[in-house]
Length: 170
Image 1 (cartoon, helix red, strand yellow):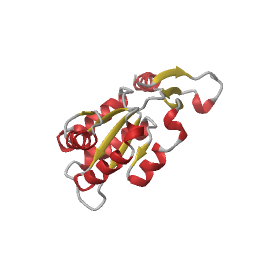
Image 2: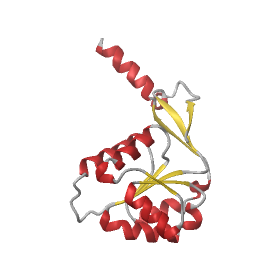
Image 3: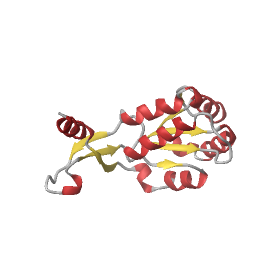
Image 4: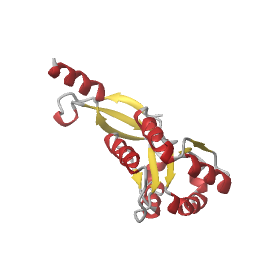
C-alpha cells in the first residue's frame, strides 16, 4: 500500500497542489491480458517468476487464474475484464492498492469493453502509476532497479482539489 506524505516545500508552485505517494519495496502489481495476449502474459510471468514471487499480484479473472495455474504464483483474481474487472483494478489504484499495471493489450482485435480499458488506463495515468502494454515495456519496468526500492512520486492532492472546486461552485 502506498504511503501518503505532504510536500515539504510549500513554496514550490508546481507541487503546492500535490501530495507525495510512496510505492513500497514490495509492489502491488496488476496483471491483465486480452484474450489474444494471455499466452504472452503467462510466458512472461513464467520467465519472471523469481521476481514476481516477491510482490503482491492481482489480475482480472481469467488472466489471474491462468497465471496461477501455469506458474503457481498466487494472483488475487477480480472479475473478468468485460464483467467489470478492469474497473475493479482501477478502483484499487484509487485506493492506493495497485502500484504497477502490466496490461498486455491486443491492438489488432476490437474489445467489447474498450471504454472500461480506457477508464483503467486513464486512472492509472491520473495516479502516476507505471503501465506496461507489451513484453518489451514490461521487461524494462521489471528489470528496473526501482523494482527493489521505495519510489516517491507527486500526485494531485485530490482532497484539496475537491475542496477548491466546491468553493468555486458556491
